[in-house]
Image 1 (cartoon, rainbow, N blue to C red):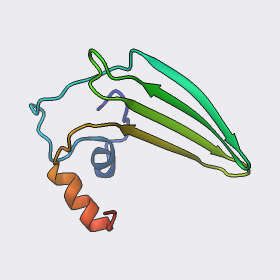
Image 2 (cartoon, rainbow, N blue to C red):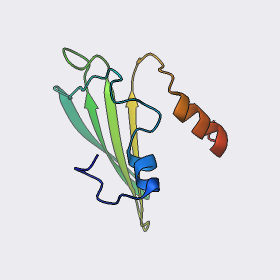
Image 3 (cartoon, rainbow, N blue to C red):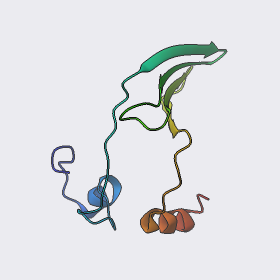
Length: 102
């Protein structure tokens, strides 16, 4: 985490770290190998959509979309993974309950 977070405050570890998940928890990293970009436009917004196909090393289709709204000082970023089996992480479940995000 030290490579991308320079602040050593507790909130930084909570926001950017993996609290509640031990360092020896198995994980896998996947890169998008076959991707296509498309652009969408409508009145008041423009969007870039990157879609990566499933295949070797990427078991699920991945979609990343960045939407820019006219006259707004923010962007919307969404990422989805199609057909990925649900995974239960107790930390995230308790955070969702605390913030009523469910």
